[in-house]
Amino acid sequence: MAKTFNDLIADALAQGVKEIFPWDVADFQTENPNAILLDIREPEEFVGAHIQNSVHTPRGILEQACEWNYAETIPELVNARDKPILVICRSGNRSVLAGKTMMALGYKNITSLKTGVKGWNDSDFPLVDSKGKEADADWADGFFNPKVRDDQLAK
Image 1 (cartoon, helix red, strand yellow):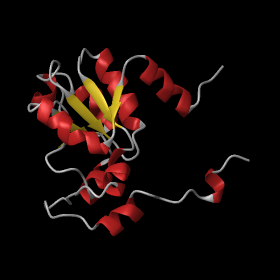
Image 2 (cartoon, rainbow, N blue to C red):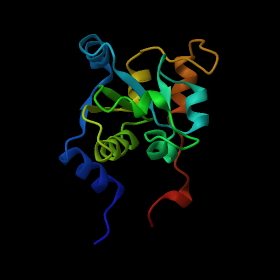
Image 3 (cartoon, rainbow, N blue to C red):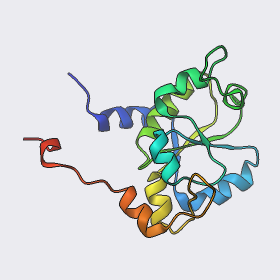
């Protein structure tokens, strides 16, 4: 039987992807000063607003970014298989799936940001835009909460 998106997320969590809430990130960074914040959202999402000092690697090229010899290779990621990595997406779902992929690639310390940048913004933590300026929280709220169209709903 085919699995749903939520089934895939539940499977990834059952296979060991850890999660933390936005309010736990400061402690995570204190305990792991060499941790990488990895934002796996699409480029337009990242440009709109992201957590300061996060590394951007869209999920669509994640596997190549984590390996040598590709145009998408990010040396910082290739060399980070033993480093703590906090994977970030919009709502905390894609990051769980990306975490599972990274674990399959040999990464040992993967954590997903539960509730993603939506939860980060809802918790009143700052986000920055592509120029490093603080993003307006009200604007970000609308940006992170796109509406589902009628044609996207199950019939």
